[in-house]
Image (cartoon, rainbow, N blue to C red; front, side):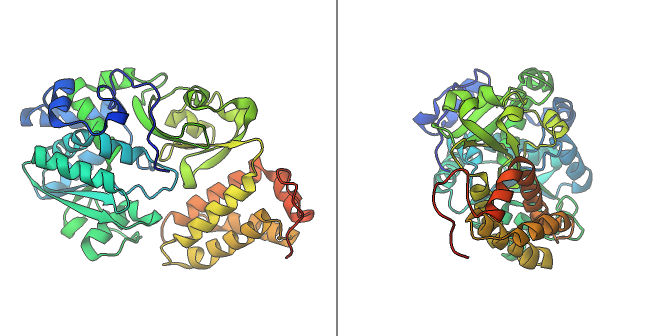
Length: 416
């Protein structure tokens, strides 16, 4: 997923001004559009503003940004590190690349503000190695506008787990992009043993807008709730790519302009590969607001919304994702190396119509046992996706297992 094709540009958002198709916003345009960044004297007011704004981390975990900055500032003693996380290893996501490539100075605003607030003298731009346009754009922006602290660009490995915050710190320190599962956490002792703020690039960009416009502006920018503005990536639609949205907008309102219709949608995967399936009926009026989604048993996650048509097999997509997650595991504990691999293999056989009822019984049992047993959250995400597929595609799982046929393909069953 590399396309970045916008819907309407929100008049007060990150993507107001220069159209996405026109390329990166340069420093002159950025400053003319948004005005100067508040100076160091405003630093003490920013953490309360972020806390009041309700801005949540947009890397997937959804942790409150203001609280995270405060936890670093209380430990920093002027020697913290800011790590701007643009690894974006989620295959369906393109929104972080859109922010880094097209609004690089918004990311640098957030980096500079974060460094002032938490007391950092070093910043790291941690960018997915495959995201070459994003890297060029941020490097050019740094040349246009050097920051008054040490800044270096680190290429994040092309691995799903490389963007997890402890994996990012582990890679910067030791060249090993695997999550660490024991304290201290990065906010206590991260890069070089110093307190480290690991913050998603989208979150940093919105922090810069909140610094200029205030918490009330951000809360009022959403359609419902205090969630403000946000980025999503649409997949499985006629016009896929990154979009900036008013949080709280109904999902149907977001995907409709990109070519999706409820009557031709079977299900929607929300939150990416660690996300959950929902039927079109329950998803269409769902507010894309983290609190509302939690109440519905879903999660905003990394902002991916992938539409599955009525002529597509949800088991095939689920099986492909599980196979990918098994390949992309950190390979440092049994639940991933053996449990997730076994689940992915059995799910793949069932999706391909070469499995058996025993395969289905096993993955139902194993899926319930996997969560919470890994060295990191990787197997938990896979287990959650699998469990949601049982809920949404339960009859199809049974059909594939018992008769080796698929409702969405007229082909004969494959040999075992």
